[in-house]
Length: 379
Image (cartoon, rainbow, N blue to C red; front, top):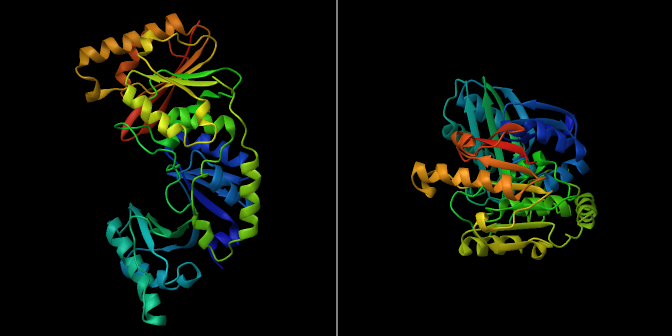
């Protein structure tokens, strides 16, 4: 019996800045005994909650099922322990696999070499039984395995998500440096927007924030386009239960009222990209998009503004950026009275240029940026 079967404890990989949000979401999806750990959240779940979480989570990037944990100071120990796992429980000769490893504060200090040792143990186990071996596919494998070694303690897990959950499947095209889907979902969650007032993104880019707002309001499962999940390769996978969970969640999808969600961008090409992405989602055709400079828009009174303004080299010199953020502040003050605005600053120094008093600021890292999500209440 594997560890996840004994204690029903799984690990959700989550960005550290949004672990608290993710813990709330996991609880809503049926997880219990939730506790934060560096890099994610441990939680207890029955199979139904595990399936529901993988299909619906907007904030976790992967859900791992621990198979074995052990003290590990050398690659020889790693190899020998890994060979004790009955790999045919998870992998067949016709299926491909890949390993992602993370090593820190340990005698084994090379993640790539650690993953090679685990790969050798798996391959050698098959060769000794049948003379054949499964193939490794680091791009799009059937089965993802995770190796985590910290302070000489190793955990080998199966990725029940089957690859990163941030890849929703709606993004058919994008502009440079798009916001990651899990970060956009965190922005929507932080805003507490529930559809009782309109939502507008005046610089929508490729539409990621609008897509996540749509999925949130319409209760569209984040994994609706996913063709397979890693939990389908667990030895105790219950296909009828998964079918039941999926049908129940799909039945909850609801319509989007006209003009509840709108967006615009100064670039017609970018708006076309956003429209392509959004219309792949159920009810995405109900989102109104315009090719428009935000300074020329009507704005939005008594609603919610959510946006990720451009920054850095894409915008040109520093003086141009300063003027841009000043004009954004003017737009919010003059054309968005009675609204709450949630602005993501990829570069924090521009917060002071917007000329508005912040209600709160929250750290939110994305794409290597130490950014901030800032709320403004506009009176």
